[in-house]
Image 1 (cartoon, rainbow, N blue to C red):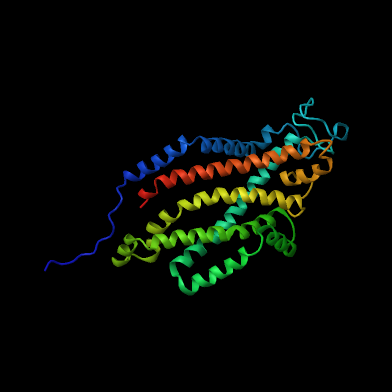
Image 2: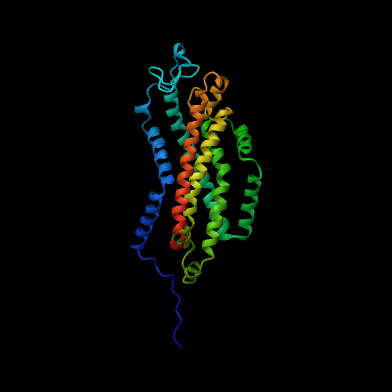
Length: 299
């Protein structure tokens, strides 16, 4: 009788991996809405990075003599607010605040949700049950109401607000990673890797992570957009950015009292926020489609 040998799954040729990545990038570049979103998102990031050089004026400088200047007024492209502050400068300053806040929230959500998702899927049983019961309890509450309650306990402020928002959105990453990891762990090549004695750490690093991570890329864009909306909402309620700092939500809140006389004070920050969220959603859809069409080859 010939000896029976157990071997691992056939290794993916190294040359195929760059080709696969090239195919994903090619599909993304051919997606017009996705590229439109990427360009818009790039403009927001560029404006945030280049803020000191492109702001026409100090965003906090008051000039009561030029309060409520209409858009396209001399020296004020997008007009001024009730305190004579340049709206264009404040939109740019708020862009940097919003992106930094959203990044903080996403990092917190990933740092909490992803490891717990792996633990729940990999160990299962009681670990899975405990983690999911806590997640169910958190998700049973409206996210914004939960954030407001937590901020009431620890105090307002942008940093606190974004940490809280990150914790509120962590279950989204947790459930996604748990489902993706559980699906990967059921594959035959994972069983083969276990049979040849592959350690748990190596198995997760080489088999589970590469296959479970693509859905996380899509989730990042979705949660970033939600974090932008949450930051604006909390700032509008006075729980996020505090005056005189600029925030799209705070600008909407301050301009609401003058909506009928000076509508641009609400329309411009609201439109900017909507475009930023739309750009993130378009990029997320493009990434999902590019990865989804090649999902059959990911393994």
